[in-house]
Length: 291
Ligand code: FE
Ligand code: FE
Picture (cartoon, protein in one colour):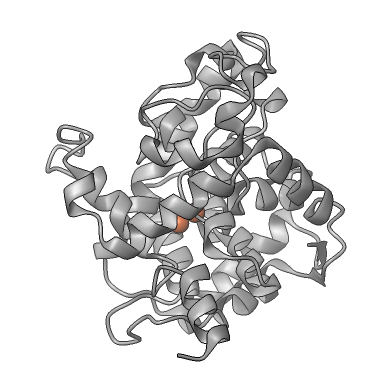
């Protein structure tokens, strides 16, 4: 096989970026009551090899130094200037191995999430949060590999919780041999608050930094921590959170079912709903943002 091809294949283990979300639905299945069944089924046995390989790469490479380097690279927000709807269309150009007949496009997932929130009568900022929550995935279009765009996020610079999916893969993470990072709080102090804590790098933190001046705080928590399953689902990092985080995580948990379980609903009519959403975007955001 052509070397560059096999390299590309090993760099992008999942055929479809959203295979990660599908694996989350299997780990945290919805029930009639809306409450999760036993939270961790035997995901190791059920996970596709591509998803497992994705987590192996993610857990191996997401070190504190890596996260700090990605923040230096992307948080100056000097890559692009565009509005929210433009960013949605840009994200939609992400072409991977999805089946266009059955898999939702990125815009469809965003709008479906927003429509489900709207149908439940939530405030306009909450609907808007559903609409934009995954725009950080444009990192893929800047050439970033899957394992530093999606996947469950987790704190770095302290001990990796065994509640994180596939914790055994942290054996290959260089931070696992740094004595300063082996305690529960590591380089942080207990109860310091998540704002002081570096999570593994991905689409959550990136989008948070892009939109942080424009949305109410509960929306910012939803965006910044929606992939932090070890925190909002497993509650494995309570010792790093402060009371304000705990209060705001009620919102993160309120958002999660819309992200995870709205995909079963009907496909949204994107063109028909566009005027409504453009007005909603204009209510909160300037015409152009720095990305
Ligand atoms: Fe997401
Ligand atoms: Fe999502």
